[in-house]
Image (tube, rainbow, N blue to C red):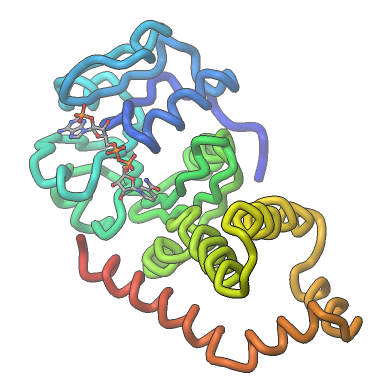
Length: 264
Ligand SMILES: NC(=O)c1ccc[n+]([C@@H]2O[C@H](COP(=O)([O-])OP(=O)(O)OC[C@H]3O[C@@H](n4cnc5c(N)ncnc54)[C@H](OP(=O)(O)O)[C@@H]3O)[C@@H](O)[C@H]2O)c1
């Protein structure tokens, strides 16, 4: 996407002190995407270290909306119903899982709604954030949204809202799948007689460190070459994939997406 993005005047983040909202706020300031005085954040307690960095802090969400050109909703889905904001004529970006763009548009009167689904790796600026536009969003705003989310990793526009529900159950889950693999490898190694500390070191090395090799290698080619080698790795992989491994993954995505579609 073009780097010729317009400068944003003021961005407001409702729930800007939370896990996602706070990480995005910090990254935007650190990377100079926004100047201090151009960021307004809200929460219910009105206290956060970001206030000492020149960020405007408010508890009045409508005041935040009135001061901002672009508004990010970073509250938990269960807190949305009580937000009571009028964002008429403005573009609202929602990070909330399980609340449709139409419901957000209806409740906030926003001119356009962008649904984005970052993940916990915003904290280390390595999230993948798919986003979907509902209503008229011009190219300049799209470019700005891409840049906002690139400040915490990578991002891409998707053309169907349902893809956000499926991706909620995939990239939205952040460290969940790797954590599951890590704990399964460690506990099975212990069952095979490996001491607990060694089992943890080995499993963590596979999931956290060896996965970094995939940053520059194609996953399918890596698997193909390991199977072609016909060694211990091939035997282990073939045993795992002989069972319903992919179907189980598919079922997990389906269950997660079904909950996202139903609403939280
Ligand atoms: N965490 C993830 O990995 C993840 C992944 C994908 C999507 N999401 C979505 O991202 C959203 C935020 O998640 P999170 O994990 O960042 O939640 P979080 O850490 O609980 O943050 C929520 C923030 O909202 C604030 N808040 C609550 N009610 C408010 C209100 N009425 N007005 C203003 N601020 C209010 C809270 O501060 P006070 O309590 O001080 O008010 C807090 O700073 C959720 O909707 C979730 O579905 C999260």
